[in-house]
Each structure stands twice: as C-alpha cells, then as structure tokens.
Image (cartoon, rainbow, N blue to C red):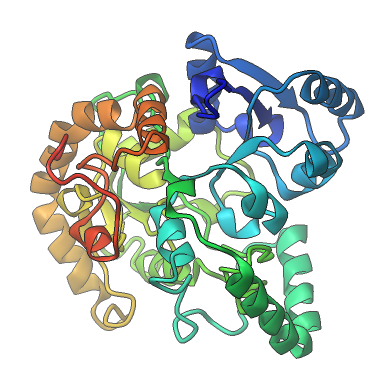
Amino acid sequence: MSHNNTVKLTDCLWVRGDMIDVARGVASERRTLRELGVKIEALKNHLDQEGLSRLRQIAWKSDDHIVLARLLPAELKVLYPIFKDRRNFSILVHDWWITPYWYTRHARYILYNNYTAIVVRKKLAPFAQFRSVPFLQLPDIYRWYFSAMLAVRLGTLAALPLLESWNWWRRQTEAIRPEQLIFMPYAVREEDVPFQETEIKYDFSSLGGTNGIWYMRDPFASSYFTGANLYADRRRFADLIMACNGDPFQVYDVRTEDRFVPWEEYCQITRQSRFTLATGGWHHSAVPKFLESACLGTPMIGRALPFEFPWLDQCLFPLDPVSTTRHNIRATLDEAQSVYPKLRENCLNLRAQLLRLYSFENLLQMAQAQIDGKPVPGGYLTPAASVQGANQTPGIGAL
C-alpha cells in the first residue's frame, strides 16, 4: 500500500484458502497472481496452526494492505484475531451471503464476483423473492451438510423474526459507500476449458448442484433463506428434463453419480452435450458454469441473469420456472433442439472474446480501475444493471 493511501491490488499481500483454491477454475487465479509477481500466502484450512502463526507474524511485521480471497467462513473466523485490531485489508467474496459480516463491514474494499451483491447492498433489489423459494425442501442427494442445514432451518424457524429484526438494525447502521463495492467477475482461463470437436452423446446434461443450501451470515441476505434451497429452480428443471430421458432424448444427470466428477470429465461431458443446464438460482448468482459452458462451445438451457453476462442470450435457450411444466417440457426441449445450431455457432464465435474479457489478469485490471474511480467497462453488465445505478461505461469492450 502506497503512502497516498491508495490500494494497488498487485502490490498487496494476498491470503488465499487452499480448500477453495483446489477448484480448477479458481486455481487459475493463484497461477495468474504468481505470474504477475504478487505476494501470496496460503492457509490450508481452519486447523492450519502453522499457517496461522506465519500469517500472524507477517501481518504484524508489515503494513502491506492484505487481500483475503477464497476463504471459507471457518477460516475467516480463525483469522479474526489477526485482523480485528490490524484492519488494513480488503476481501474478495464469491458466495458473499455466507461471509462473516465483520469482514464486509470493516474491509477497505469488497470485491464481489456477483454484481447482484452490489445491487442488493445498495438496497435496489432483494436478495431473492420469498414467494419463489420453497419454504422447506428435502435435499435430493444426501450429504451431512445438507442434513445439518435442514436441522438448522427447522430449529431456528421460531427465532427468525428476532434474527430479522437484528438484521434490519444492522442494515440501517451500515453507511454504504458505493466506491467500496468493486465488481470483479469470475475468471476463466483457456487451458482450463480446452475446446475440441467431440461426438455428441447427450441431448441435455445437468452437471451443476441442485441443493443451494447455506447459512446466511450477511444481514443483506435475509436469515429466512438459511437452510432453504436457493437452487430449487435448477432442481425443478433438472427433474423435468430427466423425466424425458430415453424418450426421445438422451440426458445425463450428475446426480446419478455417487462420486465427484473430475474436472477433465466435467469438461468432456459438457462438450458431449448439445445443451447443459445452467441457472444462477433464485438469488441470481453468476456461477462460473455460464462462462465454462460457453467457452467449451456448448449452449445452455435455463435462466439468464438480470444484471450480468449481457452476451448470455446468444448462448442460452431460456426456460421460465413458472410456465415450464411436465405438460410442455417435451415441446420446449424440441424447440431448443431446433435453435441449437445457431446457439452453438454463437458460443464458438464468442469463445476468444470471452477468454479475453474474463481472464483474471484483465479482471484484476478492471477491479483496480474501479478502485481508482473509473466505471465498469461495457461488455460485463446488462442494461438492467444501468437502470439499477451501475457505475458502468456503456459500449467499451461491448460484445
């Protein structure tokens, strides 16, 4: 951090969590930072006492501005004793609604992978619509975490009005500084999404999770959504499409696998599909799958995002969560197949431009420009984002 109190991201010390950084797409961020000569320290997990000790010494012996990135809530909790007095940090968040509020309250800058976070934090739109999210839904795949969150939901229902009153107070007492809110989308790297001509094996595939269940820590995401399935729309679409498997379509559903699908296989199945299912859930999260699928040359079927990926309508066949039913799903899938050649062509034509726009180095420069007071360039946000008060320059780099 320079003497004029201006944060320069490439001069900061980045503290990153290994638990998330092992993911293929996210790991490219660390590689890019190293290539740029940025200082990085890693935390293995929340039990990494050696790493914590090392970070404590580094943090207190240096006045470098620190960027916290890809850290789980449990890891941020054990880092709190280091930063509660030191401060002088910024934070990069993806699932921002589960981030401990102290960090977003005291960070110099908050770098958001999802632009919806900025819209919500400016109080221009809700996190999600209550009427859309199921009040209670059993997970369709057993995992201890999903079962635990279901128990939390059932156990806290009576306390939710009190929790929401507390959240209301916390929202009112936070002075929102728009210049603090930095948009830094998910990145994609060419070697992580290798394109190759592949024989089509599936008409449709569903490769994403259908249980979006979290504990809400940020007061701008209502506690009423704790334990609720925010991916219920994706789950419904997956069920409807899977019901057509074998008659007349060939469908792949990752839920039938009792294993973790490796990244190379994930890419291969995506390339083998005419369409792959993609939605951002009821909270409109800009998940990396949108970028990955487009760059792999595979059109998507699902729901677009209101504020991000203005190019997505060229690569996605839209499904309406209300009007799409078991009575019309076959006709809908037939219609999707009829426009597949054009959507496929669009994906291939956009690949090079998407790889450039969403390279981590480019996004790092874009975030730095916002810190320096410049707007988000065109090509990243939809017209609706401008209506919601986006700090955006139209046309620059637009697709």
